[in-house]
Length: 283
Image (cartoon, rainbow, N blue to C red; front, side, top):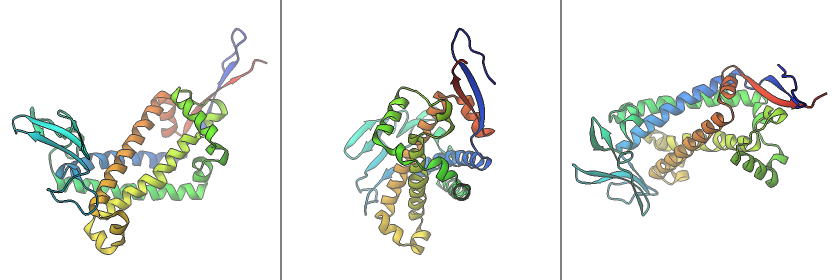
């Protein structure tokens, strides 16, 4: 579809290109479902012991590197987030939230956990199910990406894209909400590629390995994992931090999708078709 020039201005051509293959789209939406279940059930598991330790610590009396809890009387509890020696009041959201119309001491509120009521066993079952589904889905994506050349062609950054000037220009364009158009919109930019690589090759494997390290059965079979991550409590802290970074990545990703054209981006991830708008000089 082409719009005719008006008043000497260049015309704008809109071209639909096939951007995402069906395997990419299906694995993307399976990831979305898995991430939601993993996050909500993970917060349920965290609520059972809302303290994170490093090294050989881990008992109730040991100092915590990160803690979400409550202090004060049972009638007037005060929530806090404590990171090292820094304590931040969080009453109403973290540490203390409303449950059944009353304030209750709980690290994360009931509307953020799966299930909503405190049930560690059920939370673990949901978490483990979604984790293995995510791993299988990831293996399908990696196999497709390697065999089809998708990872090499679309995800791996080119050498020129890694130059400091190029990266700095892209950072400024993102900060100014200047999104690529025309031929540049046909492929991922360098910041997208680097962030996707950080998730695929960094955060997700780290999540899987630290999750396995927290399993007594896996520790018995592969005790090296405990040495790699400095113990089960250290693995739990790393797991929590990596999960927080994944949540941050998803939040930024969603914001960028909305700002750069939600309908066009959603269509491309559902049908595979992405609209490219480019200006043509008047003949």
